[in-house]
Length: 191
Picture 1: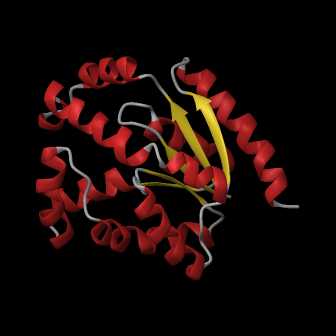
Picture 2: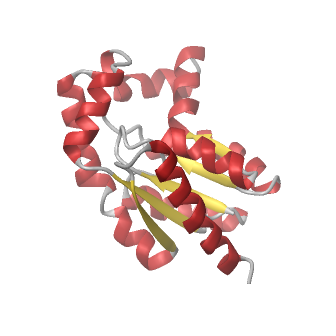
Protein backbone atom coordinates (compact mmCIF):
# COMPACT_ATOMS: atom_id res chain seq x y z
CA UNK A 1 0.00 0.00 0.00
CA UNK A 2 1.26 3.48 -0.90
CA UNK A 3 -0.17 6.20 1.36
CA UNK A 4 0.25 9.97 1.37
CA UNK A 5 -0.50 11.89 4.58
CA UNK A 6 -1.68 15.47 4.12
CA UNK A 7 -2.02 17.82 7.05
CA UNK A 8 -0.96 21.22 8.29
CA UNK A 9 2.13 21.67 10.43
CA UNK A 10 1.13 20.37 13.87
CA UNK A 11 -1.60 18.03 12.58
CA UNK A 12 0.26 14.95 13.78
CA UNK A 13 1.44 13.58 10.43
CA UNK A 14 4.75 12.30 11.77
CA UNK A 15 3.24 10.49 14.74
CA UNK A 16 0.45 8.92 12.71
CA UNK A 17 2.77 8.02 9.83
CA UNK A 18 4.97 5.99 12.20
CA UNK A 19 1.92 4.21 13.60
CA UNK A 20 0.48 3.46 10.13
CA UNK A 21 3.84 2.18 8.92
CA UNK A 22 4.20 -0.15 11.92
CA UNK A 23 0.63 -1.44 11.67
CA UNK A 24 0.71 -2.17 7.93
CA UNK A 25 4.39 -3.19 7.72
CA UNK A 26 5.31 -0.42 5.30
CA UNK A 27 8.06 2.21 5.36
CA UNK A 28 7.57 5.69 6.82
CA UNK A 29 9.19 8.38 4.68
CA UNK A 30 9.22 11.91 6.07
CA UNK A 31 10.40 14.60 3.68
CA UNK A 32 10.92 16.88 6.68
CA UNK A 33 13.16 14.36 8.46
CA UNK A 34 15.11 13.76 5.26
CA UNK A 35 15.52 17.52 4.72
CA UNK A 36 16.66 18.07 8.31
CA UNK A 37 19.21 15.26 7.91
CA UNK A 38 20.53 16.89 4.74
CA UNK A 39 20.74 20.26 6.51
CA UNK A 40 22.61 18.77 9.49
CA UNK A 41 25.00 16.90 7.18
CA UNK A 42 25.57 20.06 5.12
CA UNK A 43 24.85 18.35 1.79
CA UNK A 44 24.22 20.50 -1.28
CA UNK A 45 20.47 19.86 -0.92
CA UNK A 46 20.69 20.76 2.78
CA UNK A 47 22.56 24.00 2.24
CA UNK A 48 20.13 25.09 -0.45
CA UNK A 49 17.05 24.07 1.55
CA UNK A 50 18.11 25.70 4.83
CA UNK A 51 17.21 29.27 3.86
CA UNK A 52 13.72 28.22 2.72
CA UNK A 53 13.08 26.29 5.93
CA UNK A 54 14.17 29.21 8.13
CA UNK A 55 11.62 31.49 6.44
CA UNK A 56 8.86 28.88 6.61
CA UNK A 57 8.69 28.68 2.83
CA UNK A 58 8.41 25.54 0.73
CA UNK A 59 11.66 24.00 -0.48
CA UNK A 60 11.78 23.93 -4.31
CA UNK A 61 10.34 20.81 -5.92
CA UNK A 62 13.53 19.73 -7.67
CA UNK A 63 15.43 19.41 -4.37
CA UNK A 64 12.69 17.44 -2.66
CA UNK A 65 11.90 15.11 -5.57
CA UNK A 66 15.58 14.33 -6.03
CA UNK A 67 15.90 13.61 -2.32
CA UNK A 68 12.80 11.32 -2.23
CA UNK A 69 13.32 9.25 -5.38
CA UNK A 70 15.57 6.51 -3.93
CA UNK A 71 13.74 6.11 -0.58
CA UNK A 72 10.33 5.83 -2.30
CA UNK A 73 11.51 3.25 -4.83
CA UNK A 74 13.21 1.21 -2.07
CA UNK A 75 10.12 1.38 0.17
CA UNK A 76 7.84 0.28 -2.64
CA UNK A 77 10.07 -2.75 -3.28
CA UNK A 78 9.65 -3.77 0.37
CA UNK A 79 5.85 -3.52 0.51
CA UNK A 80 4.88 0.14 0.31
CA UNK A 81 5.20 3.44 2.09
CA UNK A 82 3.50 6.16 4.03
CA UNK A 83 4.82 9.52 2.91
CA UNK A 84 4.41 12.68 4.92
CA UNK A 85 5.49 16.18 4.03
CA UNK A 86 5.53 16.02 0.24
CA UNK A 87 3.92 16.94 -2.06
CA UNK A 88 2.66 20.23 -0.63
CA UNK A 89 1.14 21.84 -3.72
CA UNK A 90 -1.00 20.67 -6.63
CA UNK A 91 1.91 21.38 -8.97
CA UNK A 92 4.20 19.19 -6.84
CA UNK A 93 1.53 16.49 -6.72
CA UNK A 94 1.22 16.51 -10.51
CA UNK A 95 5.00 16.39 -11.04
CA UNK A 96 5.42 13.70 -8.39
CA UNK A 97 2.66 11.62 -9.95
CA UNK A 98 4.29 11.67 -13.39
CA UNK A 99 7.65 10.64 -11.95
CA UNK A 100 6.17 8.04 -9.58
CA UNK A 101 3.87 6.59 -12.25
CA UNK A 102 6.82 6.00 -14.55
CA UNK A 103 8.64 4.24 -11.68
CA UNK A 104 5.52 2.24 -10.68
CA UNK A 105 5.41 3.79 -7.19
CA UNK A 106 2.50 6.28 -7.38
CA UNK A 107 0.38 7.08 -4.32
CA UNK A 108 -2.73 4.89 -4.04
CA UNK A 109 -4.56 6.66 -1.20
CA UNK A 110 -4.27 10.14 0.26
CA UNK A 111 -5.22 10.81 3.90
CA UNK A 112 -6.02 14.28 5.20
CA UNK A 113 -5.58 14.86 8.94
CA UNK A 114 -8.07 17.66 9.48
CA UNK A 115 -7.26 19.99 12.41
CA UNK A 116 -8.63 23.49 13.05
CA UNK A 117 -6.20 26.41 12.79
CA UNK A 118 -6.49 27.40 16.46
CA UNK A 119 -5.56 23.90 17.59
CA UNK A 120 -2.63 23.83 15.16
CA UNK A 121 -1.25 27.10 16.56
CA UNK A 122 -1.65 25.81 20.12
CA UNK A 123 0.19 22.57 19.30
CA UNK A 124 3.01 24.28 17.44
CA UNK A 125 3.60 26.87 20.15
CA UNK A 126 3.55 24.13 22.79
CA UNK A 127 6.20 22.03 21.05
CA UNK A 128 8.45 25.05 20.35
CA UNK A 129 11.27 23.18 18.67
CA UNK A 130 13.33 26.23 17.79
CA UNK A 131 13.60 29.17 15.45
CA UNK A 132 11.04 27.68 13.06
CA UNK A 133 8.31 27.57 15.73
CA UNK A 134 7.89 31.27 16.58
CA UNK A 135 4.38 32.75 16.40
CA UNK A 136 5.26 34.71 13.24
CA UNK A 137 6.75 31.71 11.43
CA UNK A 138 3.86 29.49 12.54
CA UNK A 139 1.30 31.94 11.14
CA UNK A 140 3.25 32.14 7.89
CA UNK A 141 3.54 28.34 7.62
CA UNK A 142 -0.20 27.91 8.21
CA UNK A 143 -1.03 30.61 5.64
CA UNK A 144 1.22 28.87 3.09
CA UNK A 145 -0.46 25.53 3.92
CA UNK A 146 -3.97 26.94 3.46
CA UNK A 147 -3.11 28.68 0.22
CA UNK A 148 -0.87 26.08 -1.42
CA UNK A 149 -1.52 22.66 0.17
CA UNK A 150 -5.26 22.50 0.89
CA UNK A 151 -6.13 22.63 -2.85
CA UNK A 152 -4.43 19.22 -3.12
CA UNK A 153 -7.46 17.66 -1.46
CA UNK A 154 -9.53 18.21 -4.60
CA UNK A 155 -6.67 16.91 -6.76
CA UNK A 156 -6.44 13.66 -4.77
CA UNK A 157 -10.22 13.33 -4.47
CA UNK A 158 -10.37 13.18 -8.27
CA UNK A 159 -7.25 11.07 -8.85
CA UNK A 160 -6.93 8.52 -5.99
CA UNK A 161 -8.92 7.62 -2.96
CA UNK A 162 -9.08 10.41 -0.39
CA UNK A 163 -9.69 9.65 3.28
CA UNK A 164 -10.43 12.48 5.72
CA UNK A 165 -9.77 11.92 9.42
CA UNK A 166 -10.53 14.25 12.33
CA UNK A 167 -7.02 14.93 13.64
CA UNK A 168 -8.20 16.86 16.71
CA UNK A 169 -9.21 13.74 18.64
CA UNK A 170 -6.96 11.90 21.05
CA UNK A 171 -3.91 10.43 19.35
CA UNK A 172 -5.04 6.81 19.81
CA UNK A 173 -8.50 7.59 18.41
CA UNK A 174 -6.93 9.16 15.32
CA UNK A 175 -4.72 6.08 14.89
CA UNK A 176 -7.72 3.76 15.24
CA UNK A 177 -9.70 5.72 12.64
CA UNK A 178 -6.76 5.69 10.23
CA UNK A 179 -6.28 1.95 10.62
CA UNK A 180 -9.96 1.16 10.05
CA UNK A 181 -10.25 3.40 6.99
CA UNK A 182 -6.94 2.27 5.46
CA UNK A 183 -7.82 -1.38 6.04
CA UNK A 184 -11.06 -0.78 4.13
CA UNK A 185 -9.14 0.93 1.31
CA UNK A 186 -6.46 -1.79 1.19
CA UNK A 187 -9.13 -4.40 0.47
CA UNK A 188 -10.23 -2.44 -2.60
CA UNK A 189 -6.61 -2.06 -3.77
CA UNK A 190 -6.02 -5.79 -3.77
CA UNK A 191 -9.19 -6.59 -5.74
